[in-house]
Image 1 (cartoon, rainbow, N blue to C red):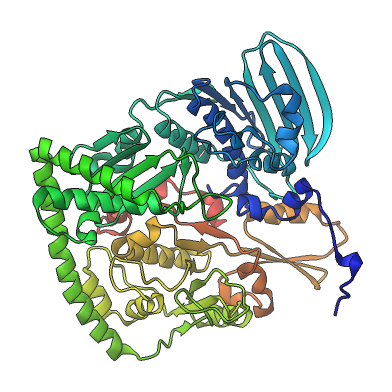
Image 2 (image 1 turned 180 degrees about the vertical axis):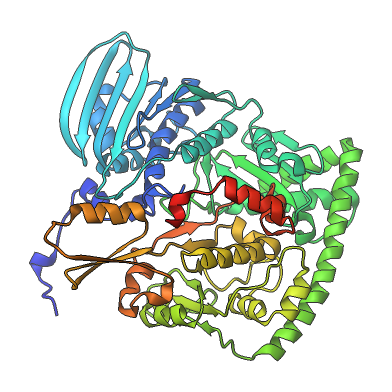
Length: 609
């Protein structure tokens, strides 16, 4: 047992603490392949400060540029950070102007933390502030000051920040243009009148959330978007033919991925407004199925449930939001009877469907009880969503791996974290569910009915999903890809809400095992990693390279490195269901010749060498 004495006590300065525990400040690290990876959080923190200037009426333009995929520059034309406090504002925790409600009434920055976190986690960080003909520019590396310059200039007021994330914190990272553009569009939707230039291309939204919903709903919307903009609240909504729900929420320009009180109040207000208009008592599900909506509020004292501000916790805002939304929705429907008729027809159709689904669910549950009292394909974890965690035990994120066959499943079972990782073992290829009804699939396919039973869900609702993450873990060969597509078809056809909520992932698995002198074993996920490894090996070291045919070939003792802390997951990300039906029809429908021609014309030979 390690000694615990005075020498065990450490005092870290604030920026060193950021580097030691980056997850506390930016969430996940990642390599930039996921829009939630830390490098995009760093960019968000710098952009947030520039957006705060726009919100305060200072500067209508922000320039963003990246000469490569490793560094980013953000330049605003606001007031500029006070020169005498520039160093403190970017390097001393809990220092900033956002504690002053007069200077920043509706701030979205991290109240004295965000820019410092960017500084601490960047190998190169340079900030330049211009105020009234004077400038000051300071350079840092990993939070340590390197240079400090000042003087006169004829530049416009504002702040320019350039940073390069530290490769030791974000190994192998690169910024992806699509993720940056998506984030920039979101800022423009939430700040009408603001122009953001990314590499000299302008992004601008004249109609705010109405523009956001137009992009999200596409041609699938049943009626023109209902759009309202008040003093501190803006919302937009429509319905589509689908039965999933796609709603986004924002506070002071911050995207609250996990919603919160403002989002639940928004939905409650829509329900109340529709019921007030037609004098009926529709239930939540009937109104929300097919709903595409967005709400943005401004609040002087938002309370979030985490440092990364994904969920709003203020309870005092519920009543006012419900009242304002319900009144505006009801008034709009009274003024626009053709749209009101479409809304009511959609809700009535949803209500009938839910009654039919309730009857179907009862039949499915009877069938599933006959199939098995216990699930023979499931190796469950000790704790899952809904269970009480043992006393003094730290809660963990729960996940279930859907594996291909008993061999891979058995190996994973041996090396998993049994507290929070469950394994479900498929037998062969699941059925292609395209064009099939839910009842036909579940009642006649034992494999998929057992999978549904393991997940704990029985219809489109995912409220009872037993795991935080559902992970498809198939081989990286043609058969594995086919099984992956079949499972994606199943989930998108019947459990699209699970995908929309970001609960579905694909496990990345290694393609190559490289033996060095028969003792040192390395794993590579792709050709590039293999080639890089081989290039670094001295010529006198004997190497043996094996290309895996399947997960079952991996030595069980090595599996923990693929499903442990260094696990690589690719999220199945959807912003909405627009075009999903057509995509599934093309890839999984009965159009074999057309699909074959498409595959051949887009085939990369290197994938099969």
